[in-house]
Amino acid sequence: MTLTELRKEIDRIDEQIIDLLGKRAALATQVGLHKTHARSHYFTPEREQAVFKRILAADRGPLSADAVRAIYREIISASRALEKPLSVAYLGPAGTFSQQAAIARFGSSGPLVSCDGIADIFTQVERGACDYGVVPVENSLAGVVPETLDTFTQTNLRIVSEVFVRITHNLGSHCATLEDIQKLYGHPQALAQCRQWLRNHMPNVETVETSSNSRSAEIAAGEPTSAALCPLLAAEAYHLPILVEHTEDNPSNRTRFLVLGYNQPEPTGRDKTSVMFSVHHRSGALFRAIAAFEKYDVNLLMIESRPAKVAAWEYVFFVDVQGHTQDANVTKALGLLREQALFVTVLGSYPAAE
Image (spheres, rainbow, N blue to C red):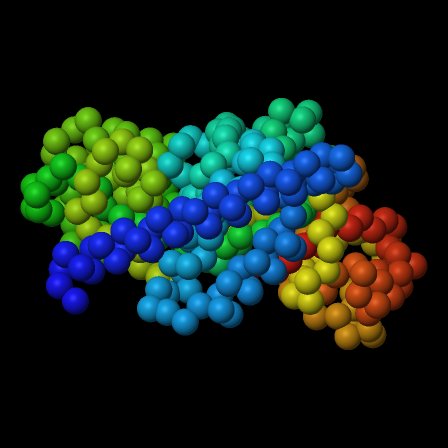
């Protein structure tokens, strides 16, 4: 086929795609009406996971799985907005990895609300100002986010979903070369995670710490001889060209984010359950408590402790386990855990992120 013929064929396929998207959107509107009448939740992560799984299984290429997932994420987001636009609170300012996590989970069709702190995100959802919230809970290098775990002791919100975001740092600048850069702005974590790269490529450049990755990009965008370590979203927000991509020292660095709401997702066969509990302050109490998971063959994925803040040297424990509360072995394990613990709170069962 000639180039003209190829383009005509693409135009013809585009017309078919837009027609099918319209039909899909019309059906989504009908789904929204059913959900309204039933007073059910509009965000159903278990259903969305099933859609992704089916679509990816049907994909024969040449598009990558990530590309197909990104396309369908926006299709689902736009369809969900027809049912009901969902507002999502995230840790701001705009351009942060938290906003990236919110987009990765909800797409770009609903309003995203920037919050100043993690506790503010919980409050926005609790008061009904936002439908959902997205909070960071742990980083593969730095560990857990204490404020997120601590806030769970003061809320009745549930974990309804999770998302992993790859932490990639880029060097943004209006300079044409590294040699032209006189000052570098970066959040302390970004500077630490790019320390070796900076030592090798910009050893003599003055570095200035900032309050956020977005703030770094904002300042550098206004200074022609400066640069910033920032994610792509922040660079785009402030029209800052990317001079060097992937300046992070560890390419496997990821942050796990939790989606907060009031849903109770149904089992998918690939789920996680998050639990908060406390035990008596006596010898072997914690061992006997977590032995409940071993007895019923429940895989323990994570355990962390935080001060209970009600008495000195008392602790609250957070665990993630494999499975759903509707799974028989998880149900039995939680029952035995309750016999050994002072209290047990299930924070949520939800589809495990890819």
